[in-house]
Length: 529
Image (tube, rainbow, N blue to C red):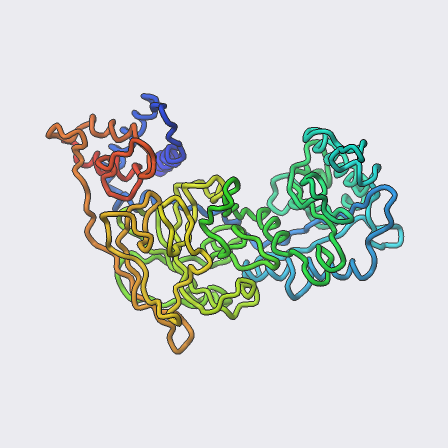
């Protein structure tokens, strides 16, 4: 029975990822599956509620303590002097492996000591000194062709081909050194090298070609330790004051974000629309700063290595207390999920961000406060927010004009009682209210958070009011006086449609959560005569 139920739930997960396309009807197979699935669910007596079935987890947790070996390869161009010297090497070792503000210490802290990152630098000469690989061509060969640079690449295809050849050649030159390592380079056992970074000499080029910070995938690299080389990151040395080996500005935030993708953290920025900021500066996976800021608690505890911590759920009204989100005490409560009876796959998370954290100091938080955001588990966690609306994670803020716009005062998202702000949420349902805790489609959950206060122990307290009554619409959507399979099929055709889309029909959104989904189908199926 359990295997059958698991298959049913997996089927629902696949259906939930379907996208509505304009002027395209669903196949009869899709509709039939959704109808049968809905009827099956509502008749299952061994589940206490639909919410219990579909409180699906988006977690990408690796259940083991981990040591990850990160490889950095230095490359300089033909005709250039060696750029690795003792002072630069010392700075970059501290940048990656130091005990202060470094990649190693950051990953150690956000994983609560469960992940140890060691960065190894290559190549090294016969005396054991770290040096750089010398490319077969000079710098101009990897720049865009111009009238003054006739040897440059002429198109994107040629640029990529030259970059791939450069990186593959550098790896071939150090294959012997890497193959003799006694430590594994495949932390997650997927037969790919976990993380390889290339650092090119000099300063970035303005043509946005190879000589800039970017990521890619090697297509024809040879095996290292019998493992394939896939994704890589590439950075440019910069100057002695600003750059990866700089004394002043080192851009550790960018390097840390790229590395965290190795741990399975999703992109929380919208790739094609920089004006849209669903998360903003409140998570390193959304906005990159000079030094890395903390991820959201939800992001931290649902990706990467299992930290032994989890987020407690709030399902009823009451008074609650949070410790700071940067607390290292594993017994402290650092976030809550507030779950609405309308839609358990979209819930609201609260956490307490303070202005006294060494990582969050880069955010310039003037006054500590409560941060509130929505998580929609029907959105593929691997995509995060990269594809735009609908968002996997959305941070609430004042001034946004619609559910999908993600504009407004994102930098002022903290609700601080030190500023006299002690509440968030409203019960306005007649129109979109940016001060409400709204679902993905814009419908108000009517959840209110009030009496926000910082107590004498430095923790934050607040009241949560969750409406008990669900104001469901009639399941007789075609108004023929009976709830039957015709009603179920009419709603199934609109499956996964959201309030902001064309041809939206609010009568099909039975639980008024702004999306037509399995919860609406199940409520209709329960009432079939």
